[in-house]
Length: 230
Image (tube, rainbow, N blue to C red; front, side):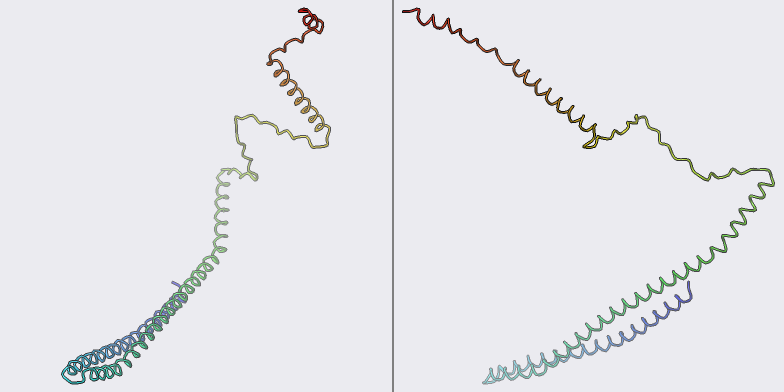
């Protein structure tokens, strides 16, 4: 472990232990104070109950009870305020402890990150000293192989491109004619002739499917037929 990180961790632990001891003392003091308040309140409640029983034996019961309750409030009200102040103090102590825990945790995380960064930089600084040793070892191995008559194949400087085999025929892409060119005008004329031929064919089929029209009567035959009865 990094010595600096170890010392930081020990310092944080010592601060945490000191804070815990201080808070433990405060908690013990608050507990004894709360016990005193609860005990005084219980005594006041018991005294009120006793006086209310005594008031039942007197002639003016109502006045006696009211006086006993007034005395009880004079004792209990200060105790209630002390209890509220003690609750507020404990809430503030818990908030301070939570803040301190978060701060200590953040400092420990920062110290760990710094230690890791320092360790990484230290290990990275050893790489330049290792690389010459690797190169020298490779050179020695190559010289030994050369001396023994073994020729090592040279690594290709350029890798051949990968050719993907396929059974599908390669269809060349035909570029559509651009508007305004001669091919585009020829294409438009051909398309218009095809549409015209299609319309003529459709009309001929429609006429062929119709029944033949009845022939018109001959004008002379119709006149003679009309004058025959007279």
